[in-house]
Amino acid sequence: MTAAEPSSNSARPAASAASDSPAARAEDDVVAFCQDLIRFDTQNWGNGTANGEREAAQYCARIMTEAGLEPQIFESAQRRASVVARMKGTNPELGALVVHGHLDVVPAQAEDWQVDPFSADIVDGMIWGRGAVDMKDMDAMILAALLRMKREGRQPERDIIFAFFADEEDNGTYGANWMVRNHPEMFDGATEAISEVGGFSTDIAGQRAYLIQTGEKGLHWTKMTAQGTAGHGSAVQSDNPVVTLGAAVARIGEYEWPIEYTKTTRALMEQLSELTGIPFDESDPRPLLEATGSTSKFIAATLQNTSNPTALEAGYKHNVVPGSAEALVDARTLPEQDEKVAATLRELAGEKVSFELINGGPSLEVPFSGRLVEDMVGALRAEDPEGVVLPYMLGGGTDNKHLSALGIAGYGFAPLQLPAELDFTGMFHGVDERVPVDSLAFGVRVLYRFLEAQ
Image (cartoon, rainbow, N blue to C red; front, side, top):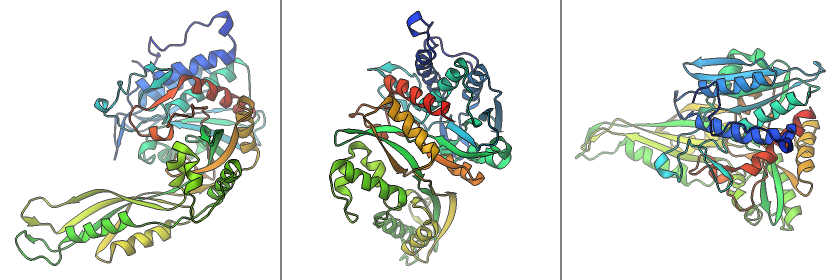
């Protein structure tokens, strides 16, 4: 598929008289755009190894141009492309809003899937494919809402900066992080941002609730190294780095971090208690977590720091004790606890193990209040008056981390009304990733309401 045209079997259908309204056309658009974007294979294996986002960025740029914008494509390295455009508002004195998504996806092993992960087939009313929930669904909603704004002649009061970044799945080194360091002028005047992993619905004790992301944990990826004395595998060894490192990995992996509440997670638990009637026991939040169903794993990870050893490397021959051994640890930190977590890891590992920070990113927490939040809540309730809206913290991270270096407060708001039985959060980076067509239609309606309120 070329970057200039959508695929033939997912192009927007010819509008009938009954479906010629801008709203109906946007619902057709969002499905076609989501399918087209999934069909761009933008797999990102990390460490600079990726298929690249160039064609997907060109595709977005074409639609942004159709919507009356003047997009610019930036390449941080060959084929590692991001695209940014600004929609001028009527009042340039107001702080601008950044609406952003990412174009890369984590790898998919086709043999593990029920369908080709890059086919974007519609099966059982859902679009299947890598990126369907992370996050080409939101990319499609942004593009469809943009076109609807153009068709209806809408101009926001504040400037809105639309961005589709490369490399989010590897901490933005070739994407948002690179853009912030090399082209901060593209975000001049911006004060707030919205992006992925928020605004989706979940069933809580029979009540549909939408979770707006108002925080995300920090990133603390380290490499541990144990030094020792190399020697023959048959000898008595008192300074074997494999043993030293193995013990350190076990202690870190088995460590139980204490439960601690931030402003966001405390507010969520208190509102869950009010919603379900289950008492909020700070020492044992499990009953409340269980009431959130499939979302419980997402929420549980935000109630404490976490540290998971993820890789080991040592040795080169069966009968040789190596001189060193290495392991990787993925730690995620609560707000303002980076130094505390680093100190705890060093203590657990012991004095014979050294640490190197490989990748880091700040924790974020923003208020569940103010006009932007009111606009998000209002847009959701306009489409679903019976739904409730709650704040939550994300256990992972988004490109909002990089924008925060420019003083931009980031929220997660990719609105989707989902079937109660769908394990939506379990599909992030999972097998058989898919998103309901009806959820996309709902999402683009909500996102359009939100954007026209800016």
